[in-house]
Length: 369
Length: 228
Image 1: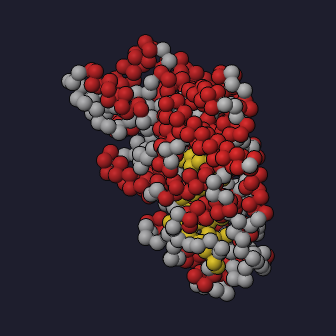
Image 2 (image 1 turned 120 degrees about the vertical axis):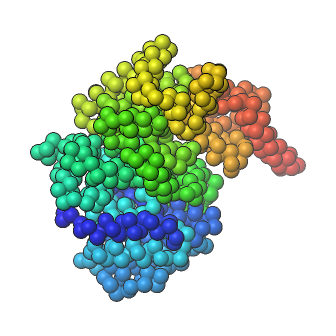
Image 3 (image 1 turned 135 degrees about the horizontal axis):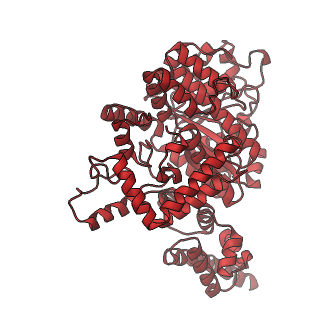
């Protein structure tokens, strides 16, 4: 994989700072079959039912089936038209769904040759999505950790991971998160040498013995404090959100807490447990009926859980408040709290922060101090 | 971002400095599960030696924090190390509510600590319930189930504690009112259930019983008419 150019980093910042326009949510999670599409379709439907103007986009070009979940027949105009440059206006690809306020940009198995858009095309796509006339744009990501999937995840206001309580899914979630983490960090780094260091760290068996994000940070600290500062600041605003799907037991529910704890201790990331959805045959049936379950049967447990998650999404994005608070804390303390050098500044900052890590929005709920 | 070896005992257990013994217990139990050998959330990311290092540190953190004396001296030592100049300014340590000046009475300080604690680990659980309250103040079966799941209880555990048959408990959650015994029994079951999962029976029972009675009243006339 060739490292992306610096312009990609710029486009990240540009898109993130664009607070007007729709809020962009990406739903991914590495493994196929964990219910990404089901969750996306239902969250979109729930938001639409709450009166928001919602566009769902199937960016899973190789395994597109979002349209099926929403009860839209095989669409004529699809994202493939944009990818292959036959259509420049994303607005023209919008398809009505049976639900009010909910529109779809579908993808179907068109020309397999151009399944993955080029980097430039992705940037165009994301810019176009930001300009859509909607309150929310939800991206249904494909499986795997391809560069394009990671980019959709990273540029979104909220990157949501769907995980099922089973080893394969958890494993893939971590590998996805690891890939996303290093990709984001590499883009945040300015110096060529440091970027190479990040690339090196992506290989788990690298010769420098960098085994974890923390090891990497220490290596960077040793070479360049400014870069280390950037690293920490980037990390602070990188807040993946987590949904545990198909839970059957209390143990399954707690998996969400366990993963956020591990994220904190391994990556140093404040992941947010957004909620869980219980296992129910009814959910499967809704897919066969090609209707979102929140619309089909809004009173079942599954729907209640999904609506609860949707309600959380209606709150201001923690990512955005995170950015603001990141800036604030920088101006206040003059140094990132997380860089440890045994200095007085750090100790004071640590005492001030205590166990409540930079948990900016100070929102109740799942943000686990 | 700091390594495991740089986290203090509180950070290790992910509790605030003012955490109550109950919160510390709960956090430790949760962490034990999360970082148990072969734990689902753990095995594919931490290497074996890192995982056992984490476990050892969790145990040590709990050993100190669960003992009031050890905890007091640890706090003292820790605070001396971290902020010798301005203890008052940085207390409570989570920085959310600036505490009273140190000169004020220690009882008020404790009150501040308690207040800060209340929103700590419990907010994870309580935040959910609050959200539920926003939608309806009613305690129905699904809500009971959600609360139970969320607080980490299995039906069987509740059955063990309350000596109420699991079938009844399931029927309560599923609102299979027809399969439940007479009201007076159900009242007892729901009370026991609520207590076990840490809900206030006074809030839960009237609300749930109202639903039950409502449903039974509705179904009875129809049966009566049906007989005629």
